[in-house]
Length: 225
Image 1 (tube, rainbow, N blue to C red):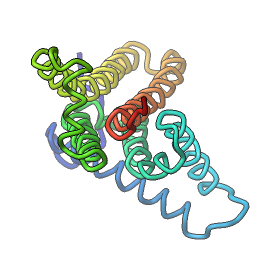
Image 2: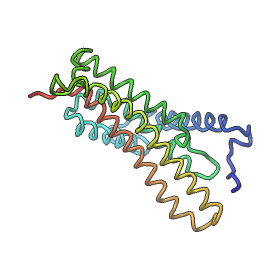
Image 3: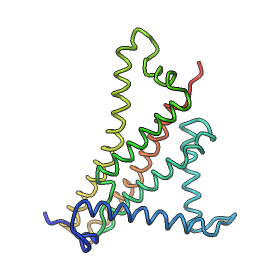
Image 4: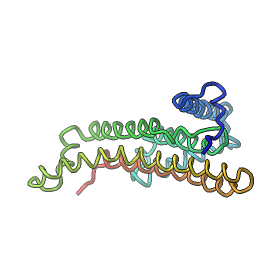
């Protein structure tokens, strides 16, 4: 099947270049939108400012429901909101003909997953201390510790695979689906597909953000018995 046209191919036809081109593009888009949203802040928001404020409040509300604290939600808001913007912009741009989703490459999804993995473990150690944090890996019974510890280690490492491959697999599959639809019927038929893929783009970003909050909550929220 013939490859679809990409604007980046007009500059240089190379897979790595295409990935870097689109990654830089989504970062530029986010920065430009952020500039528009903050250049003239108003008490009654409108336009881009209104959209960004609604987004930030939504992410903060999500964090509060997971972490159980508005203070913790606001603390980790910059990380989660930034990841959400990167993921959703990356997903959506791949739906536009002539562009490719950077999130359809394992390079981006694996980097984001590693950032989340390293960050929540760092926060867990900083909040609880090394001994107390890793003590949770031992399980409730000290006799089960030799069995529970390696299981917990594997479980935490599997989160890297879960985060990265879930996003990569879904968006890559969406791209292939869109390629087939556009190749077979390039005019009216793809319209329902565009609506479905747009919904999936936002859904995958939501899942990535909620899982990030869940992993952070598991590391920093200490249950009181």
